[in-house]
Image 1 (cartoon, helix red, strand yellow):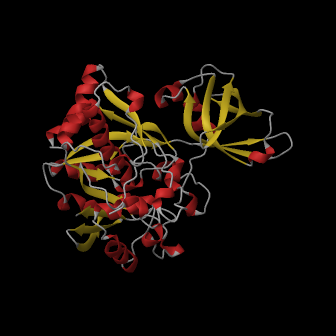
Image 2 (cartoon, rainbow, N blue to C red; image 1 turned 180 degrees about the vertical axis):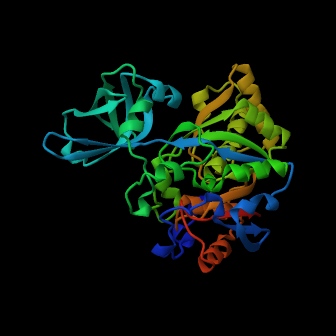
Image 3 (tube, rainbow, N blue to C red; image 1 turned 180 degrees about the horizontal axis):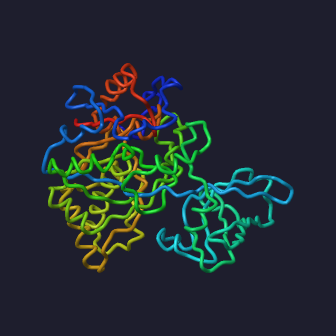
Amino acid sequence: MDTKHIHIKDFNYSLPEDRIAKFPVKERDHSKLLIYRKGEVSEDVFYNISKYLPSESLMIFNNTKVIQARMHFQKETGALIEIFLLEPVVPSDYEQMFQTTGHCSWSCLVGNLKKWKSDSLVKVFNIDGKDVEIKATLRGEYGTGQLIDFDWDNSNVNFSDIIDCIGELPIPPYLNRETQDSDKKSYQTVYSKIKGSVAAPTAGLHFTNRVLSDLDAHGIDCEELTLHVGAGTFKPVKSEMIEGHDMHSEYIYVKRQTIEKLIRYNACATAVGTTSVRTLESLYYIGLKLHKNPDLREDELHVNQWEPYTNDIEPISAVDALKNILVYLERHDMNALHTSTQIIIAPGYKYKIVKILITNFHQPQSTLLLLVSAFVNGDWRKIYDYALTHEFRFLSYGDSSLLIP
C-alpha cells in the first residue's frame, strides 16, 4: 500500500454529537470495553480487562501528567489574552522548566493575538500568603506558535507553582464546555507522574488501582514511559491525501530499565494508548538509526514523519534495535533516552513491538483512526460500527477498546 496517497475521506464515519462523552462515567473502571480479537467483536466492562490478556506479558503505560497549560491575562484596556503553553524553550528540558525560578520561555498559542502588540502583560496573584507578580512578554513567532518570556518576582516560587495556581487545565475542544474542578482529577490517569502534556493519554483514564492490582495478580508486568502529548494531537487532517499532513512532534523519555524489560519480553508489548504506541514503535527506528550509525548525537535520534516508509531501510529485528539503544545508553552513561518523535502510523505500516492495543474511540478522519486501522489490518469499520450500534461512548471521556489482531 502507498501510505502517503491514502485518502483521508476513506476514514470518515458519522459521529452523532450525543455519542461524544462530555464527562467520564462515575467510576472510571466501569466504562464499557469492546474486545476485538482476531476479527471477532464482543464487549464487557473495563474492570474485567485482565481476563482477556495473556499472562506473563508486558503492558506499557504513558505516565505523562497534564499541566494547567491555559493562562489568562487582561490588558489595561480590558482585552482578554489567553496564553496556551505548548512546549518549553528556555530551559528546554521539561523537568528543569517546572523547577526554574524567576524566568523562563515557552512556545505558546495566543488567543486574541491581534490585541497584544508589544506591551508586556502583568498578573498579580497570591501563593502561600505572598503576592507574586508575573510578566509575559511577546517575542515573536516561534515554530507553530509564539515565543513568550515569563518573568516573576518571587525566587521561592517555581514555574510549576505558578501554573498550578493561575493556570487552567485544558480539556479537548470537542467537549464544547468549560473546564470544571472535577476535570483536574478525572482528566489525569491514576499513574500520572511527569508533568508536560497539554492533553491526557486518554486510554489510561479507565485504569484504577483495583485494575492495576488485578493485572499484577494475573502475572501481567507493567512498565512506564513518557510521551508529552502536544496540542497537535487535535490537529485535523485537512489535506485530501495524508502526504500533505504535517504530523506534530512530541517529546519522549524512556528509561534504560524499560528498554531492558522490553528485550526480556522479546520486544512484545501491550500498549495503553496511541501515545505509548508511537513511543514504542519509534524505538525501533531509533535502534535502526543506531545500527547504521552508532555515533549519532542524541538530537539526531528524532524520528521523522515518513521514516518508516522509506524504501532503503535494511530491516533488523526489534530486539536488535532495542539492544542498539541499550548499547548507546551504556556507552554515553545515560539512564534514559531523551528524544522526540514525529512518526505517523497509517495503513501500510508494519508494527514492530506493539502486539495488543488498548485505546478509546477516535474522531473521524484523524491520524489516530489511521493508526488503529493499521493495527487491525483495515478492519476498523467493523469495530466502529459495533461501537456505534451498541451504545458505546466516544472520544476522550468515552469507552475503551482492546484490540488483538
